[in-house]
Image 1 (cartoon, chains in turn blue, red):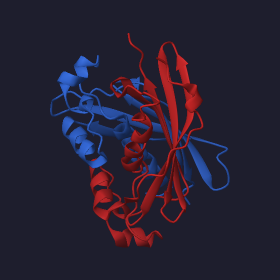
Image 2 (cartoon, chains in turn yellow, red):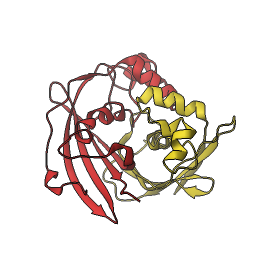
Image 3 (tube, chains in turn red, cyan):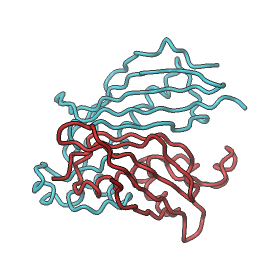
Length: 130
Length: 148
């Protein structure tokens, strides 16, 4: 079963807010000067911010804020966030898989930005909505 | 110089307890746009059987990222933090984190490997209450990029 796709807009302001809330002040997430110096095309989103947005999608699919029992991702490609009002978009979809165990559901998650996968091996196990 | 694989299996002393605040959970939930009332309103959380507001799934990184500095800053291991990229991240929950938790982190180095000039370091952080109740296990894999 395929779950409905969710789209998250990400702007520079979101990255600044996430930096403050998470305590991750790595300048590659707010300074183009530093980001380009280390070979990035520009400021990129915190991998953990992308993971948090996808976690939101998972919790919303599960219908409960406390339903996630296992959640893991691999950061495959950076999410570049331009310095404008539109920012960029992350699209999240998931397929329901069998075999997570009694009362549990496994989701295989796809997250893309500009048509390219930004996460790989993204999986969550949630308590089956009941 | 590649990271020394003899560090695999090393466990570090527990971190000082981290007090999970209600406002910190609200701030984190707001920053990621998590609007469910159980992240913001203690009554809504209690209705789901929790003692106070519930943290979103990736909230534990607030404390585990700080905790794993113990490993990253270990001069004997010698990680060059300016070359670090986040590879993988995983959370396995015994229960969600809630406001009022006092949490202690114990870091273990699970794996060190080297491939095409890059080093890979996998850490596990066992997060439990100060009283010893397990809450969540957190794995993080970082890549230390080799000199080009």
